[in-house]
Length: 342
Image 1 (cartoon, one colour):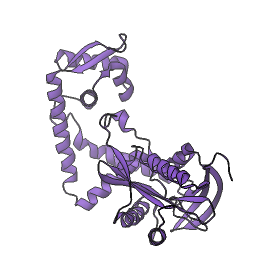
Image 2: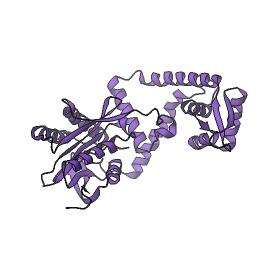
Image 3: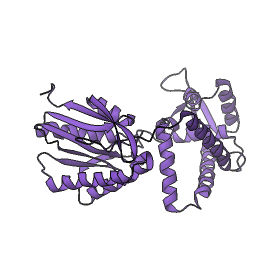
Image 4: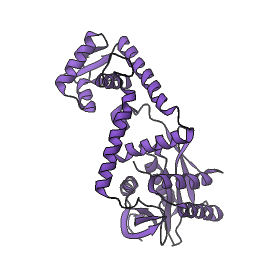
């Protein structure tokens, strides 16, 4: 998921944006160059040659899936790992011979085969996990903390933009998902919003310092003119850490609220943070008596647009412009809070 756009401004240029137009052929070359680099680098994490285990990479992937999911059927393994049915059957047969797994009928569907790790299988998976962690740590150990943060943020961005689904890789399950909570702003939160907006949009969209200046002005105006009847800021927390934010403010036109500075941290994407923030903003505006809510965003921010569309916002207009060192396409969106426009 891309960074949620700060939803801006009332007129002129706004803070949502995209990277400058690129050459598709050059983009393909760069992607292939990265693939070659990473394929060579990932050899350092190869489960067979470098982790000194008897398992191939595919066998290790199967063990990983089995140890990270409570109930796994053979058909699920075949789909999640894109494996040939015959190849998977032979692999599971080898595991069964080595007493790493047991096989039986699924309780939900007797036609399906349930795969369960034995005690020995769990020990093998634990050894793989330990050595994989050690190998990955060796790649990161020489990097300063700031560079490690840049690297992990970049990797999350790649996964978000290319459609990675953590649930499909066994990295998260509904039972283990971190808890999202919303609260109103406290002292220090507004400064955090300025800092995170500036840092994220510089890193992900190349925005220059003029964007940080704009966000600082928006936040300062909010703090100086704050009226709890009409204005509100929410901070989303994921397991107690700040993960996102949004503002509802008076637009200046009678009965119109404006959604501003919607932000979701890269590490929090995929947990519904943006949706919950937008829903809180709409609920507050409706309860406060606003007739409409408006926002300004950028066309490239597809994840944010989908949130707005699901919430009922309608696209009103689009305008190309140049702001923050980038060529952008601004979008105005509107939501009626009374069932029909007034």
